[in-house]
Image 1 (cartoon, rainbow, N blue to C red):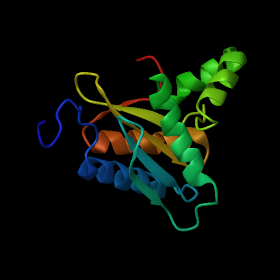
Image 2 (cartoon, rainbow, N blue to C red):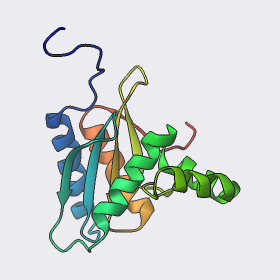
Image 3 (cartoon, rainbow, N blue to C red):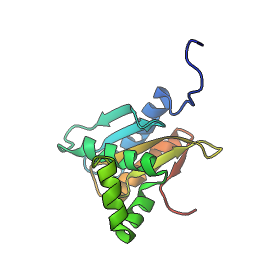
Image 4 (cartoon, rainbow, N blue to C red):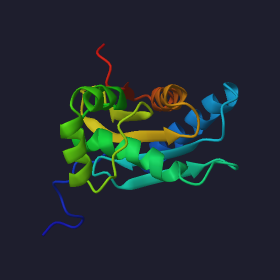
Length: 154
């Protein structure tokens, strides 16, 4: 067996995750938003990096992680999840049950893609209004030279 094991597609590396989170938080400060929590998940929905600003409220980590997890679980950004939640509540209820309530179907969850369209992971941000959280996630992903997928058609 090869060491290290082969066949695993690399996702977001730690340096890129840190760049995403720092740029996202900087955008939040520039916009004077409430304290944010940023969660970067790799392509296997495992936490790569978490940054929680001082003063962020109690459940912000869970909400941010849920935004990112939902994107990875369904394969599209938070805006599309929100649209589907509104149009297909039965499906979203079943989806919520299947993932033990871990998905949060609102803006602020953004898939991270490379130039070829491959999913490298997802970013979830919570702390302010969902639309503002998303603005920060997009800014962070773009600062790291990757492509944000919010779930809106281009």
